Amino acid sequence: MKQKSKIFKGKTLAILSGGGDTPAINSSIESIKNRASLLGFKVYGIRQGWKGLLGNGDIVDLSNQAYNGWYGGTALRSSRTNPFPSKKNPENRVPQILQNLKRYKIDVLVTIGGDDTNGAAKRLYETEGIPVIGFPKTIDNDLRTRTMHYYKGKEIEAVLCPGFPSAARAITEFTANIKTTAESHSRIIVLEVMGRNAGWLTGTAIFGSADMALVPEFEITKERKDFFLETVKEAYMDSKKKTLIIPVSEGVRWYDDISGKVDVVYASSEVDEYGHPRFGGISGVIASEISNKLGIEARAQITGYYARAGTCRKYDRRLTETLADKVVDLLLREDYGQMPVMKKIVSFPELEEYNTTSIDMGDIGNRPLPDVYYDVEKFRFTDAYIDFLSKILKRQRYEDFEYDFPVVIP
Ligand code: F6P
Picture 1 (spheres, rainbow, N blue to C red):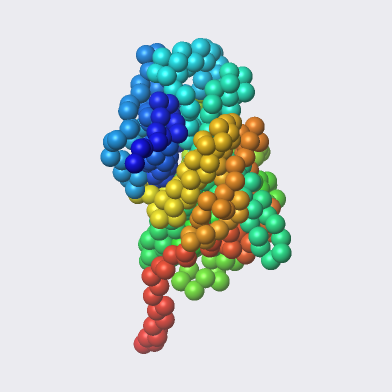
Picture 2 (cartoon, protein in one colour):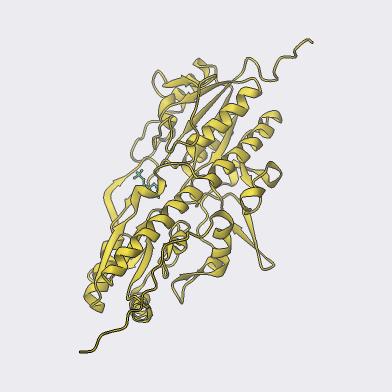
């Protein structure tokens, strides 16, 4: 039988990943690469994000190469290079990028990234007509995907980004483990969680036994701080084992008694090429205020890169495969300037192409934690958030030892 040639034979698709890594990027790359190959594309990988399109280019051929999508991080490596002029780098790199896209004969570009990488891709699509498809990625889960969460008759605009489910699992495990140490010493542990200006990831600690939490979306003014400390004291006293784990987002805005201002704690004065500062250290500030003001022993723990390191988890694996199925649809229709997303928050078995759609990359941006997911009065995530999370993550079955020994009286 005569074989028909594949539809995109002779064309080249290139993939790049930019911004902070996640455990699900290799899975995204593998899923896109395999599907694009079946359509006939030659598949290239651009190394270190936009940086790989500067100078002479840093491009590898992924066609017919084995790829391990379970392995965390990104084998294409990443950078926070911005193609457009920024304060940190005033040079316009677009001409170099266009030249390399031409030199390497790249017909379609798939950019795996958050708001920054995909925002730059969208500008290249709009201003230069480069055929791009954006692919979502971030552990922060703050990239607007317009994914709806249906809860008790309400429609909540949630977010579902590859990388978040694996990071969520890592944070619940971390919290569940730290619990035994907190209990042994009757301490409060203030657990700092990445996520920039959004508290999506911080909430996942509640599946690992945490209780109260602080998120960047609701600032801690002087009055709120006093109320928070009172609430902490009460919760600690009420706890059976005299212990508490309080997850706090790295981007929490906290009232500083000395300066009299509400601000975040910065890890350094540096900003990246997209103008983002680095946060870090708020947990230490909060733990020491708890110790000093309440007289309860408190310690800070920074979960840091643990959230985004290591193996891709099952939900993320299937999520990236499903979104890559949607990429096939976009490629077949030559519908560029789009990003595949899930239409609604679904559990693992429902991660299927029919539950996907795509959004115009012009509509992407940041989506903070919706108000309905956090109870400001109680400093707790709500049942609506728990319902959102339980679709993505099974509750961690952490060890518990309900000891209650009789006290000996001499
Ligand atoms: O955006 C992902 C993220 O991990 C944030 O949660 C965090 O603030 C930032 O990246 C840290 O970036 P870096 O890789 O520069 O340390």
